[in-house]
Length: 209
Image (cartoon, rainbow, N blue to C red; front, side, top):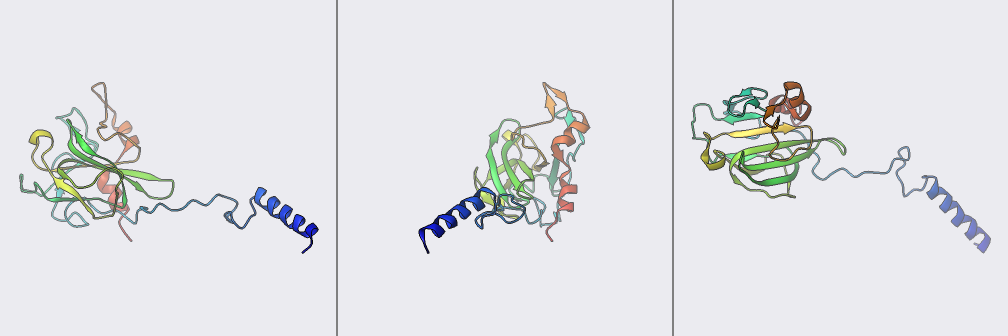
């Protein structure tokens, strides 16, 4: 091939790359290709018991129950084995879906806490939080799978409560110790639902296929 044709060929390649038509770019309407996260969810299970939560129930505060303890609407669910008292202390807690651990630590209000970020798609996320744990078996930055044991049921800071799992589903990114109050004043129910999801309803609507 002559030098003239080589020059033309190179100019054509440059033109294609500038117009987004190069074979090295995505051919789907010129949108840059985004790889799916390795931890994309494939459905949601319940955090205790079997994948359906069988044998366990919400025996404490439910979602949006008025908590006389915190004087606010309860942003999650308190799971326990009915009639077990503290008999479920030390039982395994499971990640409800594939995800990334974004917090694993302790705070004075909730005790041991694990917060996991879940990718429903490349751009849509929810967060699950597990509190009052006795033990934490995962660390920040770790990728976890649905039904992977991540810790055990506890009694909260300094054994303040009867054994149970305080479980939340969030639709906005919040710190692990977030609670629906500002300067001691409880948020309205409508504001709580701007940030938190009904855990049981969400899981039931997003079970594995």
